[in-house]
Each structure stands twice: as C-alpha cells, then as structure tokens.
Image (tube, rainbow, N blue to C red; front, top):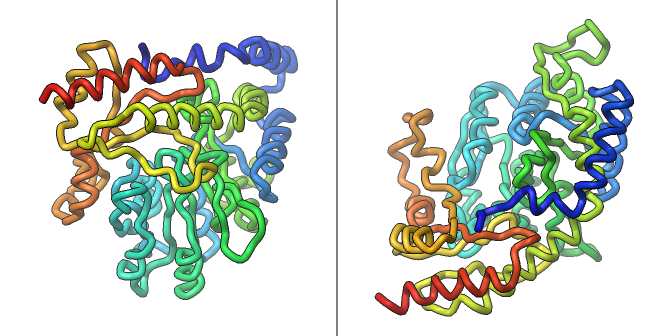
Length: 374
C-alpha cells in the first residue's frame, strides 16, 4: 500500500492526458499560449471568480500576491501579516520573502484551522493582512473574519493550496461560495499530490481585483507587461502549456474525486472506534474536500511504528511548526501550546480517490487493535 498512489490516481485519465500532451508537443508552443489561457478561464468558471493568473507553483502564488500589494502601496516592508502557526512553511516563507513580519496565531483544536475568535488580539497598527489557510481541505471562513477585515481595513489572503472545491456558507446570502473566491486574493497549488494535481509544479492566483491581476502578471513575467520593458524587478514564474493542458483534463473530474474522498472519510469515521483517537469533525460536509485525513493521539509514534510494521504508510502534516524551524530562530521561543500539541499528536492516514473500502477496513482494524492491546 502507498500513502498516495499518483500513478493509480491519474490512470483513469491517462488516455486524455497523453492525447493533450501530444497536441501541445505538436503545436510547438510551450509557454504563454492558448492552453494556459483556456485553463485560466475554466478555473474562473469553476470557482466563480473573475480573474485567474497561472504561475509556476503555489509558493510563488503567495509570494506574488504579497509582492503585488507592496508594489501597489497597500503594504510595505515591516508590516505585519497574521498567519496560522500550524501551517506548512510556505505560508510563512511568502511573508518573510517580502520583508513582511509573520504574526503567528493559534489554530482551533477541533478544526485545525485558524482560530478566528482569537485573531483580533493579534492585530496591531502595523497589521495589513490575515492569511487563512484552508488546512487539510477544510474551509476556514466566517462572518467574524469579514468583520475584522472591514473594521481594521485588512486584506484577507487565502492559502487555498489544499482545498480547491471546498465551499463556505456565507451568512446573509443564498447558496455557497468556493474557497479561492472568499478573500481579496487566493493562492492555489497544483503540486501533483494535491486534489487537483498537475504532472509537475504549477500554481495560480485568483482574485476579483483587476489591478492586482495586472501587477501580478507583470511581476511573474520578469516584471514586464511588454516584452523587454520591465516595470518591476520581477521574477520568472509561469505555468507551462503542458501543465495547463493536464489540469484542464483533470479539472473536469475534480468534484467527482472530492466526493470520493468524502466517502473515504465516512468509512474511516464509521470504522475507527477507540476513544483514544480524536477523529476530525464533519459539521458541514461540502465545506471539506479532505486533502488529508488527520487524527490525533498522544501515542502517535507508537501507532505510526505499529502501522508501518504492518505495511500501512502514514505521514505527519506537520511535525515541526514554522516558528520552530531552524530558518526562523528568532521565533523559536514563541509559546504556542495548541500548535505544539498538534505537532506532537497529529497523524495523517492514507486517503485518495482510489483507496477502497476494504483498504479502510484493514487500516481501521489495525488501529483499533493497537489501542485494544494496550
């Protein structure tokens, strides 16, 4: 058993993927062509947003959002950005790469997402933005967040690397809104292991701000809106035609695959029975697309070793929080007890659109037996 079998996940679409790859190869046009433009339009239609800018990867998407706001005069070096303390390090790298200051906020112990109720105490006169990370595929959004942004004139930037297709119920409106359209701008990763994964690196920025789009497009293309004329000191971050073509194929099946992930979670939650396991809550099924299925246990290392001996792979997302990393020694002494506890207790179990009910029964049986024996 593999933690995530990308070959098997892509197998149902292999014929289509090979067909579009051949078309791109035969076209002789590999960057900044029609395939990228088509995918950007498709993603806008899927999410319900007016603008998409495709870039090289998810980290670049976040970096470019902050850089664009700096070029637009919205932010400047030394400004503060509130960010969840238990996120993947990319969320923080994008902030510090732009000489902005991360202000770490604790997550909610039930959802693992940013504890929005405690965000206001982190806001200062230098705060310019809040990063919400839809961690593990669960939408992080509520009216309180919108109120805080309006009250303090803050930008809300979504790290939507793990939650494409998840939705939020917004009070006062009919219907639902997808992650990636909730804040002022959002970054998406199409890393191969994501719910919508390319066959290489790729990313995108989504927004309803045409000025942000204009600046981001230039920044991502060597700072140039016109060939050989650079407005900014930019970088090179562009999605290639092959990845755009692959993503166009796979986008058609995203909702179907996300629904299969929800089925896997239902199987897990039905089968995992021991009280020493804290299972993820499902308060609003459509609000979660289950990029990861994460449990909590104080006996994580023992359980992980036991499962490994029986051929069941697991992962830890993430064992070392950003503020404890060697590259951020200035933050190593921060006291963030919830983040620390999660980093010591969380364990990700195998989940994908191709994992079977019998696989889940086997995994769950081993986990239940482990706790019964002790």
